[in-house]
Image 1 (cartoon, rainbow, N blue to C red):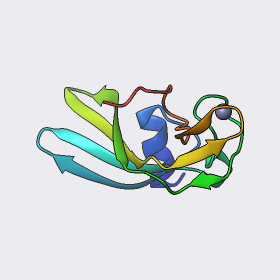
Image 2 (cartoon, rainbow, N blue to C red; image 1 turned 120 degrees about the horizontal axis):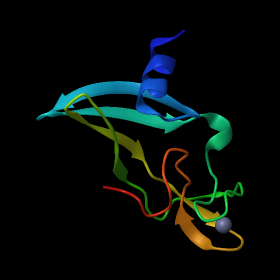
Image 3 (cartoon, rainbow, N blue to C red; image 1 turned 180 degrees about the horizontal axis):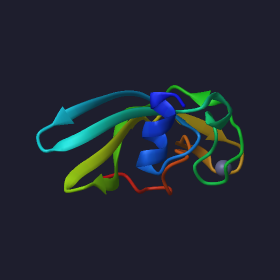
Length: 101
Ligand SMILES: [Zn+2]
């Protein structure tokens, strides 16, 4: 099993690629991205949508701690243009809408 798969499993996230891990203060920060088929989906309905370049940024989510070490998941949060919901942030497979740290 690849190390990235082990890390994703340990973090309790699915359908992601773990691209790097760093120590920041007392926390572990894992940089992830959704697997290709999970990208460009509306965070409100999950439908695939065209991208929208008006705004994007890096966001962080709190994951389950490893022992007593806090764990953060960091990823780009591009926007998509959903036919039903308008411009919304792309769905993050590991998070519910509006659940950033
Ligand atoms: Zn939608």
